[in-house]
Image (cartoon, rainbow, N blue to C red; front, side, top):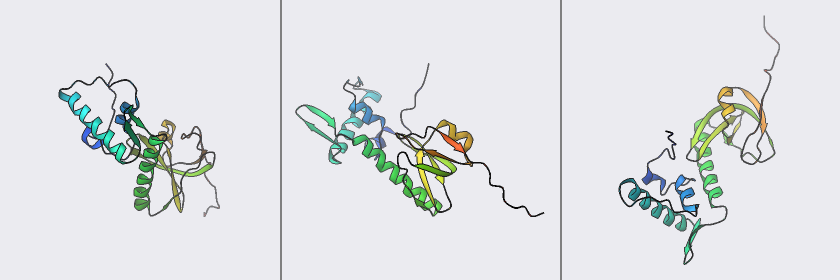
Length: 172
């Protein structure tokens, strides 16, 4: 038996949550969820209906005679909203400015910690004056607190190179 955690939040919160949720993946899948109209299935159907309406009101989807469809880039837009919300929180905590990671641009700093979003985790890469959020990689777990550099490609950080410690003059 295998158990997969689909969400960290209660179903009722997911229906109007401003990030990509597994409800969005259910709605974008052309196959019906197959949820029964009793127990959790009834709750799921209700949450999907609320989510559909919320996405339409946010102009991220539309519903017409042909059915419900997410707009192009809707999931990326939701993910960006959550990234900016998290960046604002971290900025307040650290008292530093957020610098958005650009694709194919080298990022340097210390892996300060992991933060969680509904759709996945981010690494906080911290410098003296600012910080960047990059998609979390399992390799980062062993490198928290260490300085390094890497390049973000296609919303991933495929390789992070640790920097050697700086050796300055010693006072004896």
